[in-house]
Length: 266
Ligand SMILES: [Zn+2]
Image 1 (cartoon, rainbow, N blue to C red):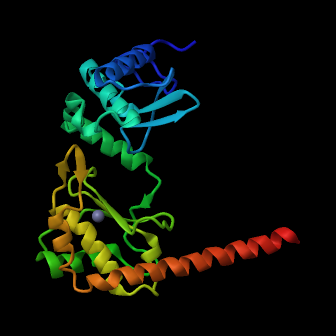
Image 2 (spheres, helix red, strand yellow; image 1 turned 180 degrees about the horizontal axis):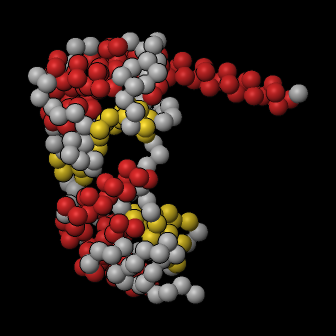
């Protein structure tokens, strides 16, 4: 039997698991949302998300980031609304639970989230020198050409593995100057230099153009952003190059599969 108010990870909760489940039910009532009959709440050392929800077979599983477990009761009540809004679609998560959104903007929580993220994340390697390209040199060159060297250098890194759904990302979570990660699929001598520059330029624009909240949704690629994006010299040439990189990667993956398949049949 677990001690009340303490998760199996040893994290101290402000409220017991039962109280948290009750808070979720009450939040659902306030928002006019229906929740599954069974609720399962746990606190886990998540890297980045404030929480995760999974619904299956009449059960809603809620996993909350351990950085939030000792938050004040009113913040957890507000978090319950955000969770219910996300899980049920009854409201836009950003439109509810203001005390929660205020709490995650506090210095203390931001610092805690950042430390946890850097210690737990497995998605990128903060090593500047890749196989073919150096991120510091790339950042500095784009900074000089497009930003009059006005942007401070953020934390930079390559993805640990090739990914096929984005070419890079920016996060303001890592302080003081944010984080830019570039897909290691582009760290290849076959990829033209301007493709790396264009990718870096896009992510650097995120340092400059603030996101806006429209109807409770956070928009990062605003109209202003898209306009500035086209200032990149060879903006129109980027897409065809990205497709080329993906095709080449696809062929490599197929080749590996074929080799494995042959070995498997022997
Ligand atoms: Zn973007």
